[in-house]
Length: 135
Image (cartoon, rainbow, N blue to C red; front, top):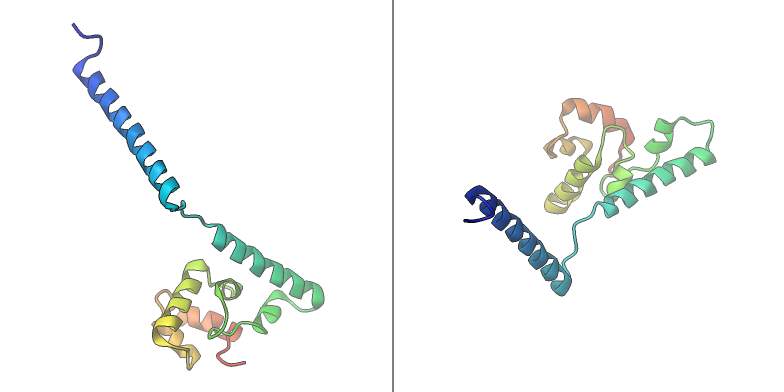
């Protein structure tokens, strides 16, 4: 006679397997230096963009936020954090703009943003006044 039923034995084997797998994965990461993916880089980029917006607002308290943002976003040279300051552009769209720029070269016109996934005619019209191509 056994203390455990067949189902209980199967569950115990499964749990031991999961524990062993966890130990192996942790050991692999420890020895080969692979770190766990983190969103820390994106969080820091967002914080720095927010700080820049706050600093601009302090410098020019009479101007509204949209006017402040209009001054500084060049889609050919801006990083992800700067692009995220454009109303309607989030982290995913900003990343897509950068990838498109890297794959196809610099933008020659604002209309070329229509080639970026996630930017359609309506979105382009909303953001058109907040972006520039050349300094």
